[in-house]
Amino acid sequence: MAVARSQVRTAAAEAGNVLDIRDLSIDFRTPRGSVHALRHVSVAVPRGSIVGLVGESGSGKSTLALAAMGLMQGNADIVSGNLRFSGIDLRGLSAEEWRALRGKRISMVFQDPMTSLNPVRSVGQQMADIQYRERSIWPAQRRRRAVEMLKRVGIPDPERQLNRHPHEFSGGMRQRIAIAMGLLEKPELLIADEPTTALDVTLEAQIIHLLRELRQEFGGSILFISHNLGVIAELCDIVVVLYAGEVVEQGPVGEIFHRPQHPYTQALLECDPARIDLISRELPTIPGDVPNLLQVPPGCVFAPRCPKVFDRCRVEAPADWTAAPGHIARCHLLDGAARG
Image 1 (tube, one colour):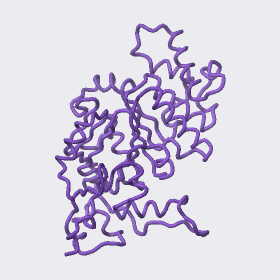
Image 2 (cartoon, helix red, strand yellow):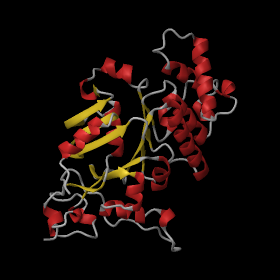
Image 3 (cartoon, rainbow, N blue to C red):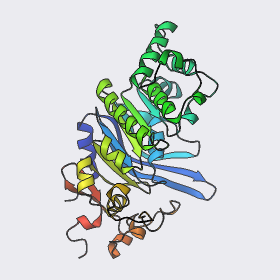
Image 4 (cartoon, rainbow, N blue to C red):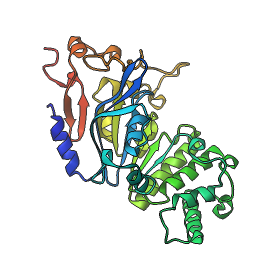
């Protein structure tokens, strides 16, 4: 049956979410016009859970993360919607209030740690900087906390490593250091934007295991952004599928991976190398490209690439439909009278 967005939002609000994004629409001003990067996106991160955000490049994953961190570019406009963190209206925060919140209660780990770590300051100096709010803690105590956190994320001989600079570490070690910095203040929410993309399979598995352990240890929540379905399946409790700035499907990880309802989700899973049985020189892809969001298609945003498209898809945007408890997909195929 169809689900009214207001009903979905009410249920989410009652679930005790650390992050609650409702009907968020974001445009980017460009010389060619406004790019409608996100449109009516609703994502909730329940306390103590790991929510995976998945989709192709250009789907809006990083835009959503940066909006939640208050790090939007100067040409970005939040057209509509609400962003709430632990009951705080993020859209109404001043720069000073953001500084008090960011890094302390909500933190972020980026895809490439070399772009977020300061190359001219030692790891120890940067970890001390993060603790600037703790005015009652002596420098020796800050250093001890940094050593303990580096040890917790698997950095060998952490006391000595504090004096080294980021370029002196391998990619996997840098990513561990970035995670240590992100968790140093024990935030309620950690946003991880493709933190394993640049790592080999072994290091990727170690980082996944580390994040799962740290979630249990610190009792925080994680919004994990990735295009790697294998990582999402192994790490996350809930999956949100984004396509061209819209949420097309979301639900428990088991539901999404075993009973995907939206053709886009199905196509993503069919392209997962781990699910391919036949030996081939070429990996499967989804034909076509993500649409130009200067002009959003009038019907279903996936219609130009969908193998199951029919006339209604091209002219009418689909509603949210419930496939199972907590599992929602936006597709006309879930309407029993869709083809009629």
